[in-house]
Length: 237
Image 1: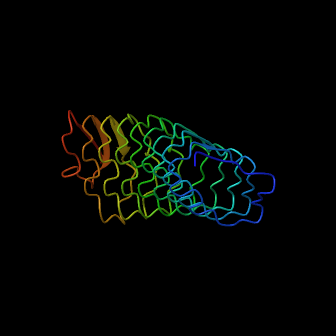
Image 2 (image 1 turned 90 degrees about the vertical axis):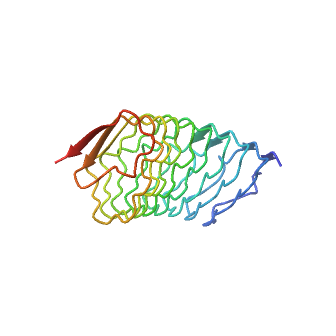
Image 3 (image 1 turned 45 degrees about the vertical axis):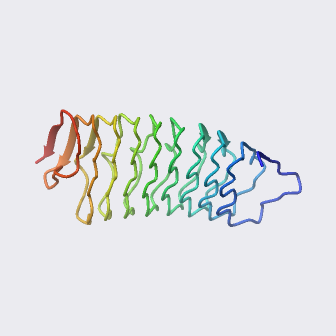
């Protein structure tokens, strides 16, 4: 099945759950969801999981103000090159775990309008976005997030990333957070609150070109960085 057409009689007005709706539609190449009414939907978890041949997806018409779960929503959309989620209202979302996992072909993910004030889980959110060159997360409110494990793991083309304003006071795990971000040249974690942190193993492992690191005095990069070249350590006293 390469294309799905939704006729006039297909109404989603009363739908509250779209979890797994297009799960593993591996041959799907074309999908027009502009007629979908998503005003009442609360669950979009894994909605497009495994749509491996889908190259474009325009969800600009989606009303997501009631959605609480976007976990794995685009996971393994491996050929996806254009994704329009610029109008997403994420004010009530609690789960963004694996949201863009293994979106290997996306070079840009526009999340600048995301409201993450209620999000509790960002585990592997951008993991495996190997061609990702641009995404702005500097405005993310992470005050309720408990898990950032693998959040940017294997974002191999990412050169810069602004996480300086992240509130990490409740985060318990940063395991593999930046692992194999091979082109990442600088990162500022000097404002990170590590009071609740239990696991930071392999946090910067494989960040081969990381040159500038800003960290709090209580942190040590021993065991974090593997094969790093020309590291300049800057610590906050």
